[in-house]
Image 1 (cartoon, rainbow, N blue to C red):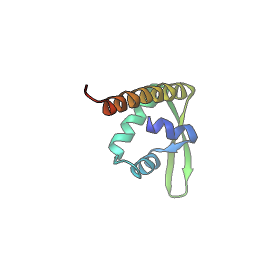
Image 2 (cartoon, rainbow, N blue to C red):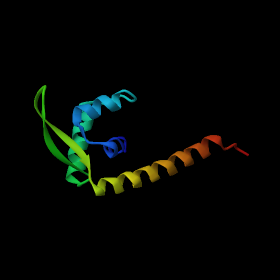
Image 3 (tube, rainbow, N blue to C red):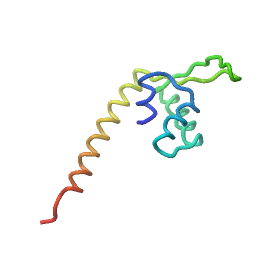
Length: 94
């Protein structure tokens, strides 16, 4: 959900996603790249290469229409989960 949310705003290359997410939560390249491969296989993202001044071309990931739909579904599920957990935490045993 985090990756899809970031890709909604603009395309990112893999390591850039790792850096961005790592500012908030601990994540490694070993987590992101398999996820990106799976999302591509599911047609949730597509890729393109862009030349880089620092070396080899970078593979950028961009959200597809299917990805936008999956993001909306994931956010709805997350919000329901969040509400349910908060309700349980705030409930008082009677």
